Length: 211
Image 1 (cartoon, rainbow, N blue to C red):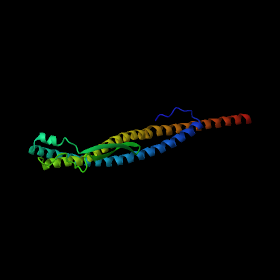
Image 2 (cartoon, rainbow, N blue to C red):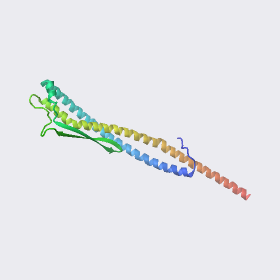
Image 3 (cartoon, one colour):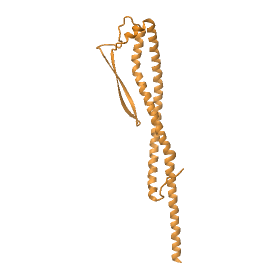
Image 4 (cartoon, rainbow, N blue to C red):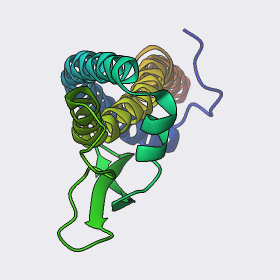
C-alpha cells in the first residue's frame, strides 16, 4: 500500500493519527448505515413482491370481468357508461427521510362530484354484474397501485444509496485507512531512525570531548 506524501515529523504524525481515528469512526458509522439500509431494503423488496403479485392478480380479475361485460353488453354502450365521472381524484406527493434517503410519500384523496354519489358512473339498467365488479376492482386497486409505485421508487433510491455507501466503506477500508496506517508506520520509523542518529552523534561528540 502506497503511503501518503508528507513530511516525516511529529506534527504530521499527530495529524495523521487524528485522521486515522476519524476514518475508523467514519468507517464504522458507514458500515452500520450500510447494514441497516440492506435490512430495510430486503424488507421493502419482499413487501414489493407481495404487493405486485396482489395488484397483478386483481388487475387480471378486472380485465376478465370487463371482457365478460363486453360479451354481454355492447362495447359502445360500455364506453358511454364510463364517460361520466362521479369522483374527483387528487394525489398529494410529499417526501420523507429514511436513513439519509429522500423517498416519496404518496397520499390518495378523492371526493364525490355529486352529493351521495357512488362510484358507478352509470345507471344499472342495461349493464351487467361483471361491469360493476370490474369497476369496483379497479376502484379498490388504485391505492394499491400508488403504494406499489411508492415502494418501487423507494427501492430504487435505496439501491443507489446502498451503492454509494458501499463505495465509501470500501474506499475507507481498502485505501484511506491502510494508507494512513502505512504512513504513520513510516513516520515513526523515520523518527526512530533520526533519534538513533542523533544519539550516535551525541556519543561521538562526547567521546571527542573526553579525548
